[in-house]
Length: 359
Image (spheres, rainbow, N blue to C red):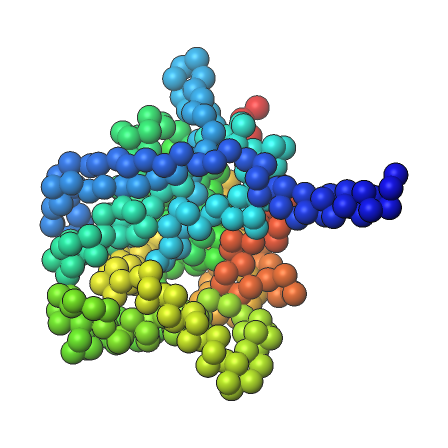
């Protein structure tokens, strides 16, 4: 072979190895489902609650009409289902012969209430939007699956961060709906301690900002910068942050760039509501109600759910078929954000699917 051609072929193979997995799954199909007169736990009602979603694969049912291949994956606070369509997640899980092969599974990636393209305060109601909580979000997702998509059973329910917390609630509220559960980067207890404190810092900054104007601002209030800075601070581990920001000047540059991106794309009311939504999260009293195999995955360098608390290790014992693992810090972990780096935990996902397989 000509040396030039050989080198070109080698470069193509390297590129294919780097990016091929990201393209080895079908493009997601997007849609909206509207729930009429949705009643929130607060007693408020929204005439039309829009839930946006993405799906990959084809829904399958057995002879009795039971859904056999549905997988629900839920995102974190201020995120959306779009966050999973990336090489380190979809490229590792949804391709042919990968753990959640989209030619075999029907994968559902919803945007939760208040997030993404689903109904949210910034659509026009601002601070008059109903006060939603995690219980509302789970109920809306359940209705999306059952009423909107015709899914009456799930092979797997999983989620990251806030989506991980929703996963615990799914296991308690709908214990017979799924075969398995996989919450990532979460704890099965109400928001407290430092996790509550950083949220309160952002909530108070926005609510006490004169420019917020009870939610009826024309331009984003300065307190959205505080929210963005806190998100940057909490979302990774100290080693990575030091590596990308090794000097005072570089830190300011990196932080300013992150903040400016948030200000361009996010909304103060949406962030406020998203952080306040965790007020009703408390799965701890009902952990024994979870019947199916559950694998909880946390990370040793997660500032939001630090391992030294020992909460996960204590509470997992109350889940009849529960198991928990702690991924140690390494050059591949990203603190709290490790939940979206599938190579860190996809082997454990495979084990869970095998454990919960119906024989």
